[in-house]
Amino acid sequence: MMTIELIQDEIIDEFSMFDDWMQKYEYMIDLGKSLPLISENNKLEDRLITGCQSKVWLDAELIDGRINYTADSDAIITKGIIAILLRVFSNQTPNDILNSNTNFIDKIGLKEHLSPTRANGLVSMIKQLKIYALAFQTQINK
Image (cartoon, rainbow, N blue to C red; front, side, top):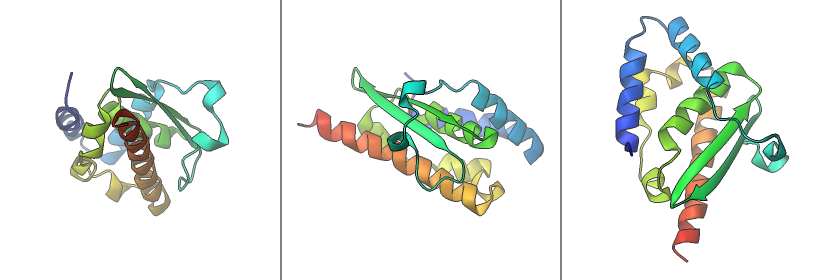
């Protein structure tokens, strides 16, 4: 099982292969196409991430002590962003997720190449991923 840090390093390496941000956006769009989609039954209001310009649904379940996230978005760039985040955080323990950083976002230059509303949405996505981790961590510790 790869650690969050190793996955982030992989993503940094992948993004460094591209010369400009148009290529990076295209790569993110491709990543979004491979996103494990949330079940249509879970595309509910309570699964929507608040603070995002576009609609982003996120669901999570704890399986054998690790969180499996699924998501979808109605915007292709946003779908790519959540795909990157799910790649980093899915299949990790709640504790590892809660104790991780997201420095890779700055290292690949993502936040600075997003509009202010998309950057706020990115922060909201990370916050919601960690809220799920906190809820599962609390459940484990009972």
